Length: 108
Image (cartoon, rainbow, N blue to C red; front, side, top):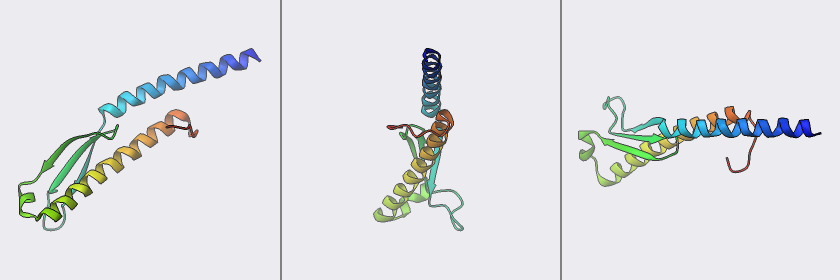
């Protein structure tokens, strides 16, 4: 009985260590979200950089961005931010799933 408890405690400690490593990894991770690129515009008009912790660290605007109207500018920024955050969430979820072995842990 106590052997099982010891084994369980050891597994919990290993998972906790792995979670801390993943958190550090996600803090360093950078993903780019872009919008406004297409057939006529090779480079994106908006580029947003996010960490794996869903923190926006940079927004770059192409020189042609200013040619767009306010409403279009807002949509381009929103699309690039959403793109970056979506990628960061997916990567974060994959890393957490890897650490927990697919277990659904409340709060993660």
